[in-house]
Image (cartoon, rainbow, N blue to C red; front, side):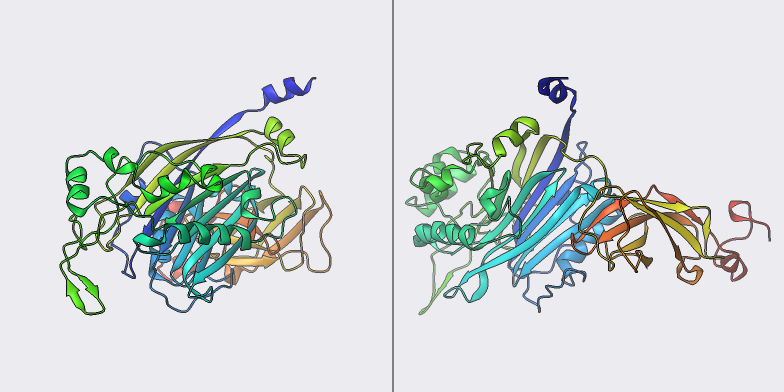
Amino acid sequence: MSAGGLRSRRRHHACRLHIVTWNVATSEPPDDVRSLLQLDSDSPTDLYVIGLQEVRATPVKYLSDLLAEDSWSHLFMNTLGPNGFVKVTSVRMQGLLLIVFAKQAHLPFIRDIQSTYTRTGILGYWGNKGGVSVRFSFYGHMLCFLNCHLAAHMNYAVQRVDEFEYILDSQDFDFYNTPQVLDHKVVFWFGDLNFRIADHGLHFLRSSINSGRLNLLWSKDQLMMMKKKEPLLQEFEEGPLQFKPTYKFDRFSETYDTSPQKTWFGFNGKKRKPAWTDRILWRIKPSNDGGRGSVVDEEEFPLKVTQDLYTCDASYGVSDHKPVIGTFNLELQKQVETPLVFVSAEGQWSADEDAVLTYVIQERFDACTSDWIGLYKIGFRSAFDYIAFAWVKEEEIAAVNEVVQLSMKKDDLPLLAGDYILGYFSRNMQSLVGLSPTFQIMESRLALLEGLVPENVNGLDK
């Protein structure tokens, strides 16, 4: 069969990406973020990418095998976990936080995860400004997400562009085909980019906003102005700014800044001008890369990005910024469709006896003896949210297609019935590279005797 015939048989898959950027101004999170995540939408989401700026700077934990301890991470995990989303990874640099969630079914196809960060604040030594990024392969397509907080104030538009270029130049990844941010097939760049609206006075700005004539302000938006002069910025696309400027608001209101501005000499009556400081842009890698192979890759496995929504959610008032939402449709042909590892629960599981599981490595990868298989309750929040675990074969790495049997001690199993799943975690890849089908663990006799479940439940006798 011809290559064209093979390509025609490959199915196109549509995945929905939901990006949020929000400068939270050191506030505690709101009680509910369902509307921010559009969890009640008719269009199901596959990936959530959440970029926050000015998170309260508690001590940062960089170890990737620990759950983030800040209140914002917990809120998003507690909201998305019961809806079938699992935290893939996160990275934090002082107030900058970037978290990635995926629908459970996608986890084995998110590989080669790596994150990094760049400081630009105070001579490059302070992390109050800069960028954090996460990159990974999604069904074989290389994606990178970059969350930035750039220099503030009206007169620093050029410096903001310089900082962005510095972040791009300084961030390196340990992958030969994507050593830098712009080597990825798609880059999403977002954050508090701090570009302002130049020249217009406060009265004209507010009048244009109140009358809905936002188009009168676009020509003086600094990011749009800089794009006309900077070839690098021209490579990035952005949807139309058809939502109100997202900064600066009185907290817990939809009223733009009414407080006097603080100066070295006290206060004056000057208010902060509204501005679209919070933005989401994206870049598709050009196909002409000097013969490194992306042209063939683009022909064989295309990826198309379209933006479905670009807006802000003005209902949230904990910060003087409003959160910005961008939703995208990723139309792709999968380069990989088979998990690296097949995992299965054998027989009936309960805490009355040790349980048996098997796994099979289906394709060679960088496995190691510190990999493990976790037992997860459906609705788990991250790869480290396991109930119990078992190390993989310790004496040597299993061969491809070798069936390996492991056991979990009965004392480690849950007493109550529920739906569970097994997942193979690769230490080197920092991801779950194989998931079992969902199975049920039965109530144990001990649970019934101790009164933890009602008598005769599921047909059990007294």
